[in-house]
Image 1 (cartoon, rainbow, N blue to C red):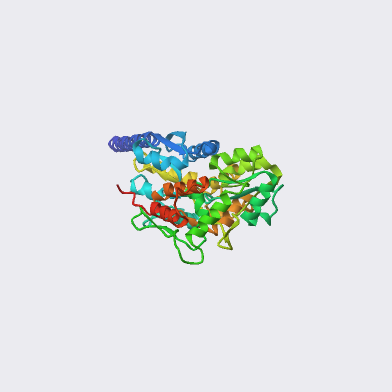
Image 2: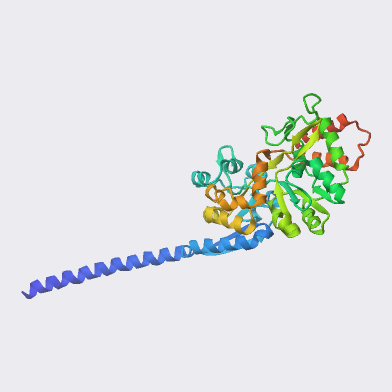
Length: 417
């Protein structure tokens, strides 16, 4: 009996040791996972200065969402979206892990090896409008997380001066402004805005298959509207006392000073327009202008903004999660609520509140007459030089046709030296 009891006790003690050993092993694994799960993840985010408060809120909610999975040290730095390409291509290793940028920079950033393809591309594509997905896609791969669908331009106007009928015609708007001793403003010597006079004339501008050079026939001498017809229209518009060409960044100040009562800009100026004109603030698609004896609806470059992830990020997986989070449905709604930025997310864009914002509706209405911006670098300097010549009134002895030929030669020039 005693021998049997000893055997039972021995078996019990052996089992206890085995069980305690398993428990110790599990505790070690748990401690190891806990240690690994709280590793420090350092990320840098770039965003526009005016979006700082909104982006900070998104970063904080991201930390809360993934709390316990890592210790996050996320730094938000100010970087203008317009300068992201140049900064990144100069020093990609010193660039942010996550950054916002406009779609026209996509080709250069991909060519420079800057961007990580979106890992959950199908999911992201299904959540956003097709145009924004197309704008973030190159060679069949999605490289950006669509964020906004409002990076275009339209007409702001002061309802105290213009009726809804007036703003359908640029000629009428200039007449009203001239009579009031005021101005209709735009950045005329920027290729982004200058395109508005060419885009719906039947003349063509496109990026060649090399992704670097342009094809353009804006100097065409045949057809219903010739290049010189547009040139003549531009001379008439810019010489009108009611017209003002100034940098886009200065239009808001001139609205507030009372000098400008209408101006071509984008959603980034909506708060400035409201501040300047209060209840009289209005926004609509661009007007038509007179060219070759007919009314031509002004065109525009349509644009989209997105978040990208640096291919050289030391924490690419977390950077992708952060970019995805900052562009999800909820955060696109926050952008709209706090910054009046038009969402690319399908569900967010369907909100009835969108229709209440004149600027968002204006960019949507204008997009029907817009084109996705895809041009090579030689386009910009050529357009600026041409526009500056028109503004100065001094062609240097060139005929109207010769001036258009110089413009097209510049636009189609090879950028390879």
